[in-house]
Image 1: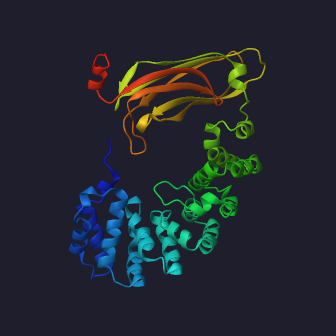
Image 2: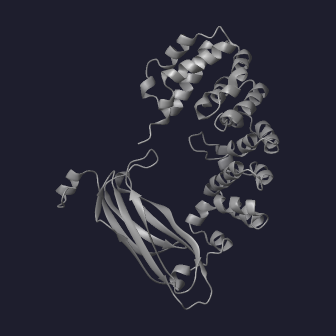
Image 3: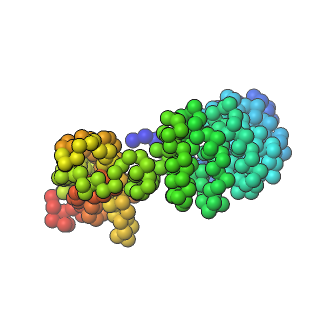
Length: 379
C-alpha cells in the first residue's frame, strides 16, 4: 500500500528546505522552523493541515513584513518544484489577501513550480471581478501552467478546495474564460476546462448542454473537452446529451435481445474483491451498427441503510447487429478516503445507454465473523 502523501513532510525534507531558505536569508532560524512545524499535534495532522502548519511556521520565522517575506520565497521558488511545495502559494493565501497585486504576481510565479489553484480562491471570493479579470489575462498567456490556473482556479466544485458558491449559483462569469481555452493545445489545460464544465453541469446542466451543442464539431481538441466535460450528464443518460454523442434513445429496449450479469461469489467482506461478469446479445433486426455505452451500476449501501448508485464504464463502442458482447470487472470493497463501505445487500445492474438490462446482487459483510453469524462459512 502506498504511503500517505503527508509523510513526504519528514524531518530531512524540512531541514533541506530550511538550509535552502537560510542560503538566501541567513537570519532564517532553521531549527526553530523545524520545531515549530513538528510541534504539538503534528502527527495527527493530515496533508492540508501539514501544509498550513508549514505555512504558519514560515510566517513566524520569515520577516514580519509580508513583502519582505515574499521576496525570500520568490528568491528560492525555482529550486522548489513539485507538489510538496504547495505551501508557497498557501503562504500567499494565508498572509497576502490585503496585498492583491503583489500576491497575484507571486501566484503567477508559484503556480509554475507547483499549483496555485487552491490559493487563488480566497482572492476570487474577496474580489471576484478583479481576480477574474487577471485570470482572463492568464488564459491568454503562453505558459500552460498559467492557462491551466485560469480554468482550474475558478472551478465551482474543485476537490479539496473551498466551493465558489457565487459560481455555483451563476457560472456565467466563467464561460468567457472557457471560450478562450476551448481549443488549447495543452492536454493539461484541456483536462481542466473539461473538469470545469463537468462542475458546472452538476448545478446548471442546461448551460453545459448549450455549450456542448455549440462547441461540438468545431475542432477535435474541442470535441475531446466537450465529451469529457459532459461525463456526468452521460452517466445520468441525459436524453439531449446522449443524442448529441450518437447514443440512440431506447437502444436497450429495442436492440438488446438478451443480457445477463453474474457475480462470481455470493458475498464478500469489506476489504475484499469480487469479480463480476456480463454478457449481452444484440438483436439482428436492424441493419446499422449501434453506439452503445455499457456500464456496471453498483448500488452502494450507505450509513443508515441509504443507497447510492455509482456507475463504472465497461465498454463504449459501436457494435453490429447480432453481436455478442462480454467482459468483466473486479469490484474492490476496500475503504477509501472517498468511499466508505457498509454491510448489506449491494444490488448490481448492467446498464446500456442509461437503461438497466440485467441485475444481480452481492452481500457485503463487515467481517468474517458477521458472515458466520448469518449462516455462511468464514473465509
